[in-house]
Length: 131
Image 1 (cartoon, rainbow, N blue to C red):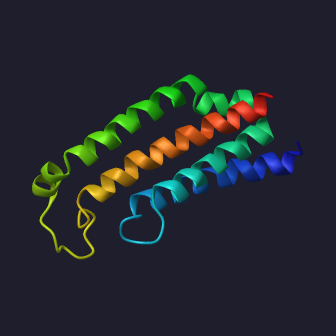
Image 2: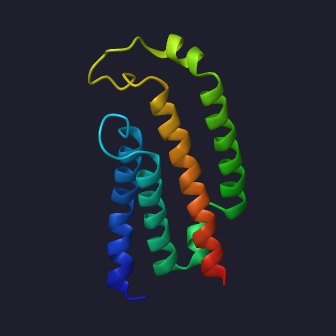
C-alpha cells in the first residue's frame, strides 16, 4: 500500500475506535447500540489489516482471543437476561433522565453485545482475509 494510505489509517484508526465505543456506550440513550458500534470497530481493524497486512491486525487482537471473548460475552448476555430483575433493583431506580444508568441493564447488554459483535465480525474478516 501507499505510504499516504498507511499514514491516514494510522491517524484515523483511534478515532474510528473511539466513535465505535461511543456508539456502544450511548446506544440506550441515542440511536446506535451494540451492532453499529461493534461494526465500526471492526471496520477500523479491517482498514489496518488491509493497509498493513493481517499480521499487524492480529497483533491487535488474535483470532483465538476473539473466539474466546465471543463465547464469554454470549454467556454474560444470557446471564443478564436471566437475572433481569436483580439488575433492575440493584443498578438504579427508574426515571433518571439523561443518566448513564437510566436504562438499567440495557447499557450492560449494549456493552457485552458490542464486544460480542466485534469479536464475531473480527473472526469473519480474519477468515476471509486468510482465504
